[in-house]
Image (cartoon, rainbow, N blue to C red):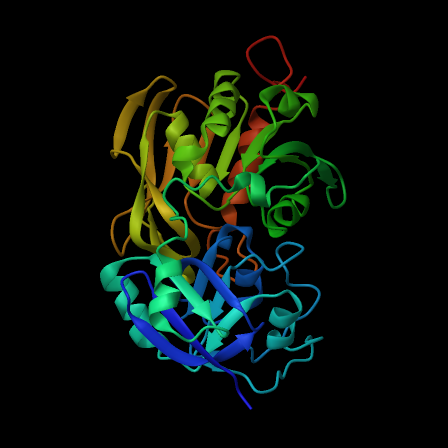
Length: 380
């Protein structure tokens, strides 16, 4: 027999359904993800730390779970909301059922609610705090606890998701380049995509200093995605500024893009409901090409189309066609660029995978001028 559960938003809107996953109570920021596939990658993406994810696709769990598609070593979402969970997985790669995985990892969820209505509410009112409970079904009591939960603005979360110690992912085949990757919530597919291009990646904790970066003698530096408010990432901004001063090639994705934006002197701000899913249209302003891309961000960089900064000229390279939000920056005078979306998306789409090729070319052009050199840059 199903166990009842409730979901209560910060503004008091309440939905009733049944428990899905672990029985208990959880709080976080309610956000919606528009992907129709890749739920396992979503669940294990550290960027979703402290967020309760609402899946807009109605049927979730059809392909079960397996040991290969995780983007980290655990589920990171604070809670999970679906309409119609699959009764039984049907896929040759499945090694288990989604609800069993959620239950095993203590992830509280709710099913059987009108996720379309919930998504429309969040789109109109914005992402907000939420509680999900299958132990206390009193909406007023749960709402009081929701209002006590911390907001996402001002949340410094990198230290909660980063690797506790450095590790290395070796290049596949012949080693071509070395990259130092700062882990603010990195997904496994980032070093995989680099390894496929002959890159050995040294993944460093979010607390790494520029000296720690220089110690691996990198040809280039990567700033990873991650959760939280980029306005709190002062340490990382300082490292990014030093990387650019040394003219070491730098590529930032998502949270890493926001860090670089701040290092260039731009501000960041919270989006109303964010971009999450694998069907977001982005235009490359240099070519006019439109890419269908994977997103997971609730903050963005406030940058003009073109500006002069301490590090020279900077231009907006990509914009989201839905709302014109800045989706990429390119520096003209130092070897640095960013995108706000996810070219490493394991579940798709793969339109933006070429950006890793651009990163490798940038590193190859600067090879011999690494972080540890004394001549202002270069591979030592």
